[in-house]
Image 1 (cartoon, rainbow, N blue to C red):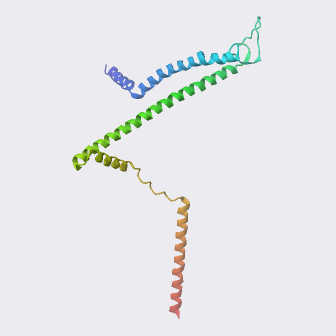
Image 2: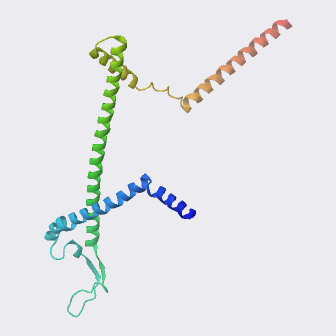
Image 3: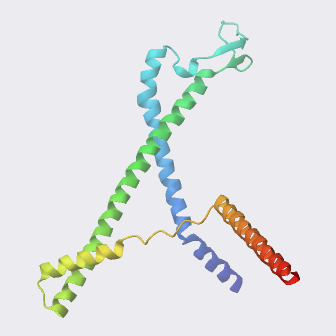
Length: 205
C-alpha cells in the first residue's frame, strides 16, 4: 500500500511539472497546426498547382527507368523502376510552406511578447517614479511636478550603465613591456659594472 502511494505521489509530481504540461500543450497545438497546414496545402494551394501541371497533379510527375506494363497498357508502379520526383518536389514545397507559416507565427508571438514586456517595464518605471515623487513631496515639501522631475532624473542616473572596465593588455603589449624592462635592467647592470671598474682603477693608482 505504501509502495502504491509512493508511486502515485511520484507520478503526480511528474505530471504536474511545468515542462511536462508545456510539452503536452505543444503536442496538441502542433497536431492541430499540422492539420491546418495540410489542409491549406492539399485543399487550396495544390489544386492551383495541379491545374497548371495537368492530369494527375504534381505527384504524378515521374521518370520511368524500367517500366512494367499491365495487359491494358497501364504502368505497373509496384514492379516498375520509377523516380517519383514529383512527390519529392511536393514534399519540399510542404516543408517550405510549413517553415514559412511557423516563422510568421513565432515572429508574431515574439513581437507581442516584446511589446508586453516593454509595456510592463514602462509601467513598473512609472510606478517607481510616482512612489519616489510622493516620498519627496512628503519629506521635502515641494510640488508634485518638481518631485516627479527629480525622481525621473534620479532614476535616469541610476539606470546609466556602469563604466566599462579598462581593457586588458594584449600579449604583444606584455612582451614589449618585458623586453623594455629587460633592456633597462641590462643597461643598469652595465652602468654599475662600469662604475665598479672605474673605482678599482682609481684605487690601484
